Length: 138
Image 1: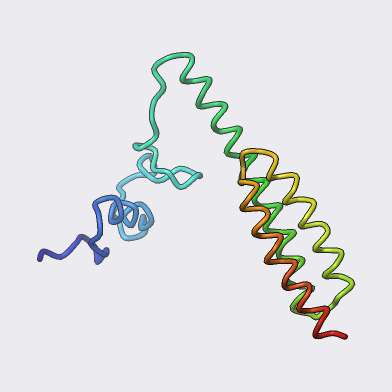
Image 2: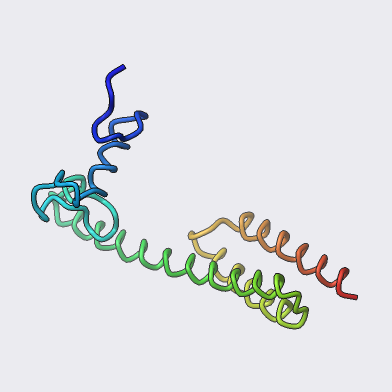
C-alpha cells in the first residue's frame, strides 16, 4: 500500500484533502487564495450559482444556517449552565437553569432546527440528572 500524502490517514480522498487545507504552514498551499474560507469549506468546493433563483436560495440558506447555529449555540450555553449547577451540587441554581433549558428546547423544537423528539429526549435526560441531584441532596 502506498503511503498517503503528508502522513494523512487513508480513508478517502476528501479526508486527506481536508488535512491539506489545515496545513498552510508546511508550504503546501502556495497562496491565500486557495486557503479555506471562514465556514471551513474550501473555496474551490463552493458551488457557483447560475441563476438568480439559485443566488437567492444560497442567500436564504446562509441566513438559515446562521440562525440554526445561533439557536444550537444558545441551547449549548443553557445546557452548560445547567450542568455546571449539577456539578456544583447547587439544587436551586440547577432548577433555575433547568427551567431555562426546558424553555429554550421547547422554543427551538417548534422550528426545524431540532426535532421535537430530540428535544423531549434531552429534557428527559436533564430532568433525570436534576431528580438524582435532589435525591442525593436531601
